[in-house]
Image: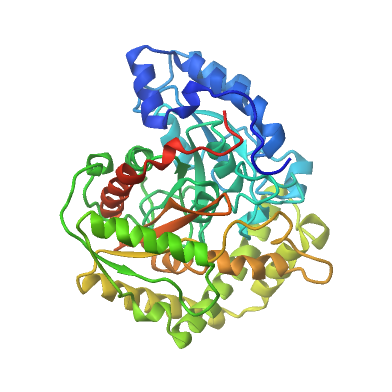
Length: 488
């Protein structure tokens, strides 16, 4: 199937965002069971074309929806999907895109803190979404479960590593889905599928009990509206005892920032960073957004942190980030092997994963410590630009439009082809995983019928500014009314 082939009629419930669906349930317009059953029906109808939902837990979801013990939280009865990478649920599969875990029928023995917060908020989990192996590349085509297709054009990738989540939301299966971001894995799929993707600040959301907050990865959602990104963050950004980093609160609750009009902001623009060529349509989306921001009364200036396009700085960061990424791959392979009860071998993982993990094991403790020092120096250098009076930075989300399926996968004799070809998609996103700053991708561009996104980056801890300005742009453009050709 190619571009523009629709799948069935419009489902009115699929047009509601998570906040709107929760409001309808509270008013008694529908029950949690009706809400969850409608999502199940959409998944069964749409997923054969997209391969976004790899684990279905429909019976459990319906039982939770009808239970008197369903928490009366702000999203009571709203269906949600969980990314099959680190966000674990007790008794449910957790395969992280790996065939060895799939073949072993591996299940988790505890709820991740994020999943606990979802349940406390009243969300009903209906399944888990596809992800590349260990989330290492910018497409979702794992050997374990096969490729996920972009609902805007099924010949193209929905991005990665939260590609299953983005495809599910963009097609209307659920209003929002869990996603994670270690180098752009919330923002890249959001850009490629026409969604809102907010990467929170480091330490905003607990990563426990099996992950740590001081790394490059964070958890949140992909969704259609800024108010969903804000309200779901309000419900989940509640620390647990023992969290290693807790981001400072500014402007909480975030949903009150919708339409708050905080005044004229100073916004810098970066169109390219001289590391990769940026597609003209991605540049055009930034220019259009800069004009919209100026029309809204903000001061838009040609300014950005110098480190972002200084060759020496960016090469140093690229090397440090690569060491951190490879060491993380090695640790993940060893950790999952321990949980499986045996040491993993090359036959257990994809060639790219095995090669990257091998590289990680080859670095010394000195190499790793030096990489952390480089990343810390970079973090402080970038923070100074915001401290000097700039409120936001505007960039493309990705350097290129969505790739065709197969373009970011390994080839014979090129195990790292997927990682290397993913770099243009993470050029603008990964620096802010290093710094821990919040950043949001907004669906404000297109390229030959496929979505491209723009990114806004705020100072550390200032998700409130992103929500405020994002909601201003949303009122101007109303992107959530424009849905993918494959939709409910």
